[in-house]
Length: 224
Image (cartoon, rainbow, N blue to C red; front, side):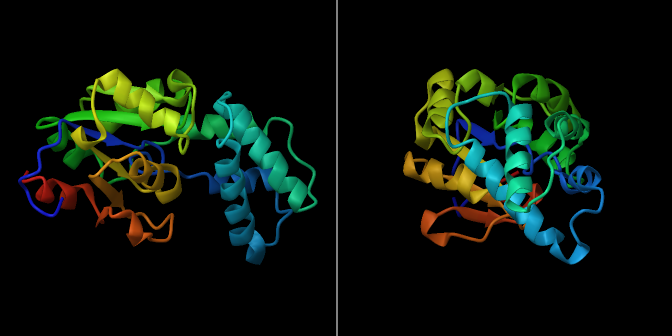
């Protein structure tokens, strides 16, 4: 989508991390209570992130429990006693977050010109709280709970396409995550995908996505 001639029927977004600022480290630090040395925190957070990914590669179940199970697994790896209500504390944190500072204004502009859709890896109750904070009009909001699948499962994307009565080529999908979104979207035939680069994942150019550093930059590519 290197030119402004492309007019997708829908623009779909990942929510947490891409639009909502995914600030999980402060709550994780609170749960740990200093049990991980500061110099080892980046490695702990990397492991925690990897376990969160692994937890959603199977059958759907409630997101707070996903967070609990991923936290329990990383604690086991690090020989730490887990926290019984970690999932609730982490879930409460997710529900408290707001958008990245660079999101509301350009997203509002985009929503005035295109049908916006969210495909999110969370329960519906999370999105009911988070989406109004984005300040834009959305044509549809789809969740893992509704789909019965988390991304990167293909079923999540197939659910969205079924609900929209759309084909992959009708959709421009935008995410800051390669493994959750851009790789499976490519596998399913999405020919227009965008990496909104927030530094979460290493680049994977073989997946043929366009990289932007802001929604303002994406709006320019869309001719807005």
